[in-house]
Length: 134
Image 1 (cartoon, helix red, strand yellow):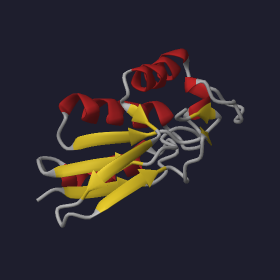
Image 2 (cartoon, helix red, strand yellow; image 1 turned 180 degrees about the horizontal axis):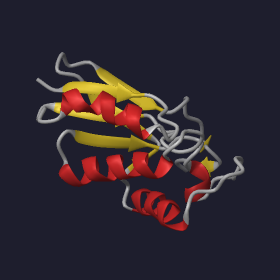
Image 3 (cartoon, rainbow, N blue to C red; image 1 turned 90 degrees about the vertical axis):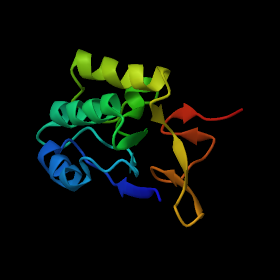
Image 4 (tube, helix red, strand yellow; image 1 turned 180 degrees about the vertical axis):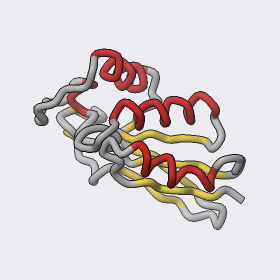
């Protein structure tokens, strides 16, 4: 049976993210959905990005990274916060977006057969400054 773990806004707090993920190491039937706002405000945005990049590369636990409004400026959305990411970190977000590793929403089916649509903060045609759908 698949376990779905949903992690809210991380906001650059890499130590807290690592602590939340520690019990999930080696859990093959676990899908982690991080709902966006991985970056900004906290003390270590580069560290948070590194942790997620490592999890995506490992594939276990499976990782779904959603787009939050703090990532949106790096994939075509409108900038709104004053401290930009470093060029390598901005390129990483852009690469995730272009390869569909960074998504607007995720459809998840639980082990009990329930279906959920997970988003950052709701979803409209214009989500995070980016047009979604047609």
